[in-house]
Length: 225
Image (cartoon, rainbow, N blue to C red; front, side, top):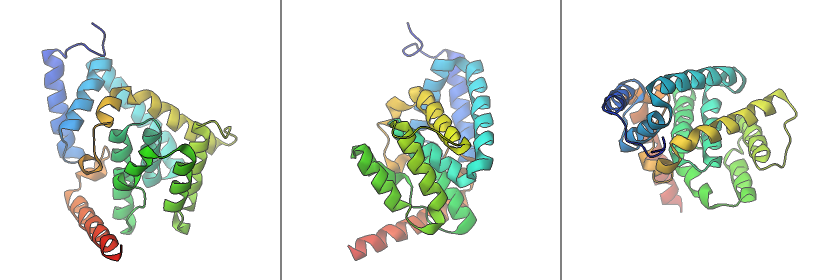
C-alpha cells in the first residue's frame, strides 16, 4: 500500500489527535479539516518527517518574513496556495495575514478567505486584474506589486530578475510542492471554515473583534447594494 493510501498507525493517530489539540490552544480553534490535513501530512512524512518538514517551513518563513513583513508573508503564502488550487492553505494563510494587519493597524485586509474564494473560477488574466483591484489602495502598493509579479512568474509571463522575485518564486514552488498533503481537503473547505495556521489565531479576543468588524463590513456592503 502506498503512503498516500496507507492507514495511520495507532501511534500516528494519537499523535495527530494530540497535535490538533495543541494547535487549538496555541494558534486558534481547529476543525475537522485541520485534523484531515494533519493526518494526511503524517501519512506522507511519518512523525519524524513531520517534525523535519515543520522545521523547514519555519526556516523558510524566517527567511522571507524580513523581506515581505509579517502580514504580507502570510498573504503571499495564501496566494501561492490559491495558485496551487488549495483553499485550505489559501484561505488559512490569507486569514492569518488579515488578522495580523487588523491587530497592527485596525484595518480590514482586502485579501481574505471570502474575497479569494471567487477567484477559483476566474481565468489567469481575470485573477491578476481582480487582485490588482482589491489591492488598489496606496497602503497595499508593495503587496500589489509582489502579488502581481508572483502570479506572472507562476504562469510563465515573467522571469525572476531580482532577489525579491526569486523569493516570490521560491514561495510559490514550496507551497505547490507541500500542498500534496492538503489539496484534497483544500478543495472541500469553504471560507467560513478557514482557520489560521499562525499564532495570531490563538488570540481569541482579537479574532472575535475581527469577525465582528467583518460582519459589519458585509452588512454595510449588503445595505449599499
